[in-house]
Amino acid sequence: MRDDLGADVPLRGPARRVVSLVPSLTEAIAASAPERLAGATDWCTHPSDLDVARVRGTKNPDLAAIRALSPDLVVANQEENRELDVRRLRDAGVAVWVTRIETVEEALASMSRLFTEALGLADPPWLVEARSLWATPAGRRLSVAVPIWRDPWMVVGSQTYTDDLLARAGLANALAHLDGRYPTVTADDVDGAGADVVLLPDEPYVFTADDGPEAFTTPTRLVSGRLLTWYGPAMVEASAMLAAIDG
Image (cartoon, rainbow, N blue to C red; front, side):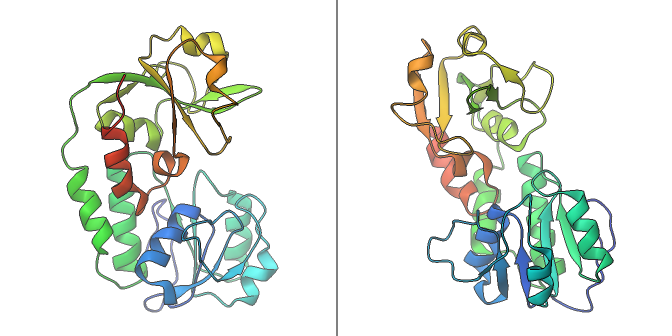
């Protein structure tokens, strides 16, 4: 059995005890097979009533606490988690499945493999619905810019899941031409990009009505960061949210 990066995952059968180091994967497993989830990070906030052992953060997981939970499998992500932590867990004999997701298609395929191969389950209903909702890209209708941080300003660039999600919803990323997946810019750069609207998510930076919109002359919309960046059940909700955005 191999993960998204082609690494061997030494599972003897379907994983029954899973520790998730990725908030979106935690939500996906909790929504589909909650009895399989033994642990999650402090950043795993969905579902809101999630009651499992916590193993600190995505970038600084408590490896000893993870081992103490005796998981059959730890699930991680190439972008969100450190290679060092993955290597240390594997060196300690813990099976780790690393996902690599930069597009909507990769999200759907990766999660299907995780559920069917690693967990031995059928595709959950939300995954079937998400596959249907995102099967046909919408025609371009608006240009957007998406800051994700302030001081310094950083925005969503190309080769990211969010960039592809926006494009499939008909929202062209006005800053996709910049170098890097999350380029550092100025507020003037954002205003000068020609976007119809600036989308201000509530994570990782918590933009609010009083913190963010005042920096731009371009119209702004406050949106859910979870729906822009989380693959999993959030993909179903994201379809309606992005379809409702107008200039």
